[in-house]
Amino acid sequence: MATRRKEKHYTLEMDGVSIQVVQKSMRSIRFTVYPPDGRVRVAAPIHLSRSEIKDYIERRLPWIHKQKERLESMDFVPEPEYSEGELHYILGRKYPLRFAGVRSTALNGRSLEVPRSLRGQKTKIQRSMDGLYRTLLKEFMERRIPVWEKAMSVRVNARGVRKMKTLWGSCNIRTHRIWLNLELARMSEKCIEAILVHEMVHLKERLHNRRFYSLMDRYLPDWKEREKELKEGGIRYY
Image: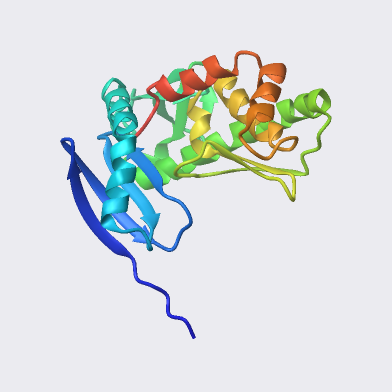
């Protein structure tokens, strides 16, 4: 029986950048620059030599520097404290948090109302707010998916919301299921719609190729501006 080769972990210093490298069982090399501090990670196939990986990184250094500069220009907000009056983004708008005699977290006019019984319990407040985010995104999908099904002549068999670390959305081509990232509830509806359309276009074209982007241009001509707003909006937590 063949034994699985172990992973390798090490750090390379190149052009003033500290790069974390992990080599493991995979087919292609992957570069990631993480917010908010611009940490760089390279995941590479286990069979590549260190010199080969350095060659790959050398060719990608301009992109790495560009991504780090982009992150430095962004305004990141700190982890929320869930205190009275603290501002929270919901569907792209700011709402002050108020503790009130309500059973669950909800929007009330221009305020975000949280059960008074949860005051000081950050984990429970976050869970309650996640419930609100999930409800809002599901309502959005219920409203907008039928519109785009008709426009694209496609069918979405199932939809859902979940937390995702690296994706705003996903589409299962085989089952025709669309997922949206829970974090999207903080963004404007035009940004959410851009991701929804993106995932639904995958039901017509699986790959990110010329045909895919041609379809995006047809259905949502300003999709580039919407995705730029999503990337640069600064509504991010660390």
